[in-house]
Length: 301
Image (cartoon, rainbow, N blue to C red; front, side):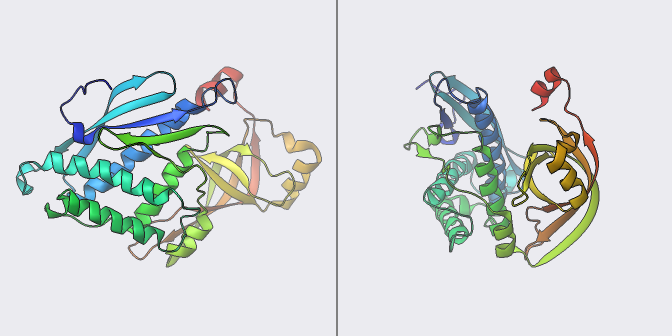
């Protein structure tokens, strides 16, 4: 293992993506790596906020190893108000908490089949609280547990990062002091179930949006898959006139194309007024947008 570029071994962690060579989309391990790094960085920010809102974690790439793709990262911690922290060793304390917090999350998800599994979110909250006690992060000023809604959002974030992997591929997380633990590729997040679990109020708005088509529904029995705002979403199309034309002759929709449409966006909120994943419904298709030229399409997929 290469020596760290920064003397902060307690914050170091690695993500490894194993992939079947010569099969599938060649970009999938790289997309998975990028999405997992960004998902875990967002989780780190909320972990650190639960300790002190003045602390900000910044990820630095330390090393990339060949073969499978293994990348090592260091989380550098900085605070706008060092004097507000009780411990002079707070960087070690908080850094160790972020590493162990990610382990706690992934261990709890290892055998889970759904975010709505009984007491799953409560179990993760308990595990994070235990790690905060073990690392002394709980003794720092400002500690507050992460909400169930934020946890569910992070689980969905990590799960979406694994969507590029195919049969035989895998991804793991490890630190310098603990063995690798796999990301659960079988875990699926059902937004409707998550909303039912957490929501107490709902707000609905109609918007004109452009949705890039990822996977159409040809049979009329399932949801369409789109990309919107840089992430995958599912939506049901209620424009029966347009659907009939689509099933008859394709309605001019080509691979890589998009729909400009009137869309109902239903956003639910939990007991702490945090938003849950929106529910999208296409009310009226206004325009079929052709795909960009081939070169631009490759750049922006």
